[in-house]
Structure formats: structure tokens, C-alpha cells
Length: 317
Image (cartoon, rainbow, N blue to C red; front, side, top):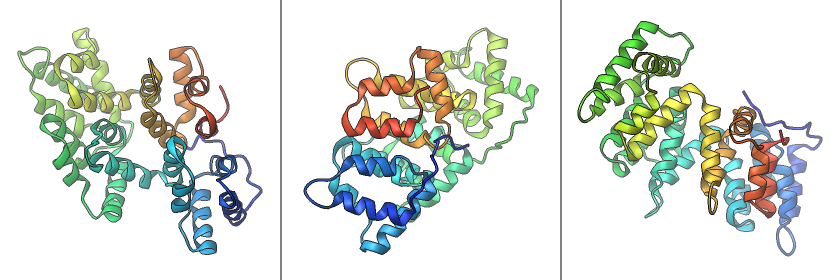
């Protein structure tokens, strides 16, 4: 369900393309004009603008933006240009293959918070764009239980409907308890199997059953029994199953908490969720942290970068 409120656009994609071209002309770039156009266009409109720009000026809009913009605003605008599937493929590829800076956390967040259908779509695009199978990059960069989880989660078909078998959920809760809190050491294979094979609705029911049966939350059990990227992957799958908006509100809060801001996380989450569930993320953020997400972003950012992110967030509520 798209939640970026796109106001009625009175200009055509062709008009937008020529306005962008004018913004690039002369000394320096009119970044405010670029943001004002692209920050208020949905995925279909952005695609048409790029087509028009290519036809009119025989060059890619993304290339021109890349040479005209800089810093955080450049990263955010270039990511926003993509449609959601291409964007996910780009983020994961970048996270798994940028020289020394491998960002397993970002790759894990994207893979483990998406549905089976979404993963299959961006895996296909990944191969078309980069000529390599995503699993090969995972194989090369991840390790141990984390690698097993990512590969299994990316390849195992999962039911995506709302129906749940309660007795099956209780059986899984029992299996997870036996594999974790009940024994010395952890049987990670059981965690990988259940978390990569079960639907979101089923995992939410497993979490509920676990708490009922053992008086402890499944999330706490994961934190106690696992660590590192493997723990992050399991928690991302579980939290996305229970309440994805709450999960992303927490990720955003963490990115802005304390000294300094994790801008790559801030950009990634706002840009990827803007057209999906941002209104729910904003509601969860306000409920949990007592301030609006817009106010938090405003106080942690500045200049054109701030303006662009706020345009993606929409009204301050």
C-alpha cells in the first residue's frame, strides 16, 4: 500500500525533464529545484521522467545527478530514482561487494525484511544488472549460521497468506525452546529451518505461543541464544513478521540515537519505505518515542539533505 502522498502533478514528465536540465545548467546545480521535482514524484512518474530525459538529452539522468550532487543528498536522490525492486537489488549488491566496506547489516536488513515474492523479484533484477547470482555474493561475504540463514531465507518458498495453524505454531514454539533455552548450547539448524520456512503470520503465532508456553518472549530467547549477524537476521525476520512498521521505527531511532547519525541507515530506510508503509512507521515512531519522525529527522540533518528526506516523509504527524 503506497503511502507517499503525491500531490496532483500539473507538469508532464517531459516538463519535469526539461526543468531538471535547466537546474543543471549554469554555474552550480539548483539542488532545491531538483529536490522539489524528484521528491514529489512516485515510482511511475520518476521512471517516465528518466525516459524523457534520455530521449531529449541522450544521456542518463542518474549520470547527470551523480556529477551535479554530492554527499548524503546525492546518495538519497540516486537511490530514490530507482523502482523498489531495482533499489533493493542495488542496496544488497552494494552492501555485499564494495571493496573493503562490506555492510552485512544492510544486506541482512533488506533480505530478512522482505517477503519471498519480493526477494525473488529483486534476485532476478540483481542477476540482470550485475551478471552475478545474489547467493554467490552471500556465499562469498557471509559465514557460519548467518550465511546459512540468508541463503535459506532467500531461496525457500514461504506462504504469504494470513491463515495460521495454531497447533503447528505450538509445535514450532516447543522445537525452538528445545533447540535454545532448554539445552546447553543452541541448535542453530532448528532456528534456521523454522525462520526460513514459515510464513510471517505463522511466525507471529509461534512468538505468541512461545510466550504463553514458557513465560518468556521469543525475541529475548534469540538475544540470549544467538549473537552477531545471525541474531540480527533472526530478529529482523521475527520483527518483520510481527510488526514491520515498529521494526523500522526502531531501526530509524537507533540510527539517530546518541552522538552522530548513521546516515546510510537513515537514507536506506526512509527511501525504501516511503512508498510502502511510511505512514505506519511514523505512527509507531511517535507512539514509542514521543516525538514525530519528521522532528527527529529535522534535528539530525541539514540543508538540501534534510529537505529531501522530509519531502519523502510527507506531513509532520
